[in-house]
Image 1: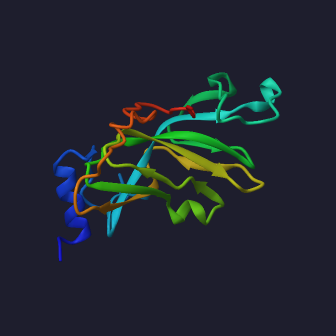
Image 2: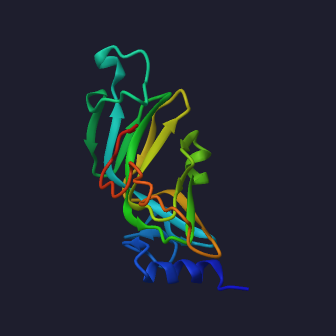
Image 3: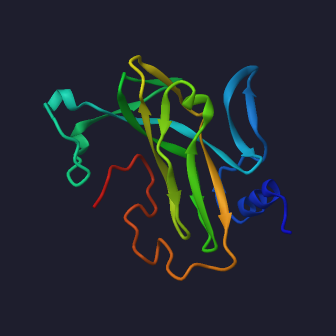
Length: 190
């Protein structure tokens, strides 16, 4: 039996896997309640930064979203103080505050927090492959018929880590992954 999950995550953080690293679950800042972030029982709750890209397809008359042909002009860049509002039935891209460096014997999955899910917000489930490094680009969907607030610098998703018995044969870096070392909100690449 190995170390407890939260102890294992702390050990990995000491090795530079998560930066900045918050070694406890934060639910309040400066006397105000926040959507939690930091170490949780079996993972790490990451924060979304204050930088977002909102799709503005109506501006250009785009009728189809094409993952092979995304253009930065299809989005407007927004930097907010407290929160961003995502229009009804729309989505935004955000970026994590935390930088991740996934070891060669680890794979992680990013899943949305239930606080947002209960409001009709879906954070796309994605993997952090062994050897991947960078800031996480987060796809945030508003499935409701109403605008929704996404709070900057607060918890948005949980990362769940899985440790393998040994290092992988081919890492994300080895395969020249297209999202390696991304530093901001990164659009789809083919």
